[in-house]
Image (cartoon, rainbow, N blue to C red; front, top):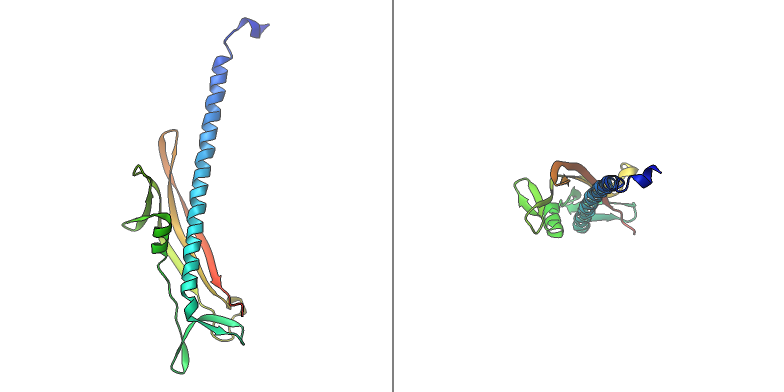
Length: 176
């Protein structure tokens, strides 16, 4: 009986529920946008690092009988370590469409707004030992990390950027 005599009193509640659902939906959408950008940068970084591993393929000494391989070249009567770091930033710039702005590599939208930026690339190349050595290190690997910053906005306001360290690893193990 109370609801029958209060016609139209459910309208404010419906508006409040709708606004809450819209806020939840925009929050979830922003979260998924951030995760998609981070995943895309991680995958591109991995592609660039794998390319650097391929660049080192020509210098890899094939220890077929010994079962190891590493980045070495013959020098006189010995072998000398030969490792190529490649140009990871150049590959990232070309794949992601980044522009260098000081120490940052920035991706902008068609409207000129910053979509994300990357910086502080770190590479650690672990060359396999030439003979014997540690069995766990018997492959050529490159570990990399980069800082990714993505601007966050919610409800028309710009919030502090999401800043994460993206890491990955790639390696070369001879099959034969």
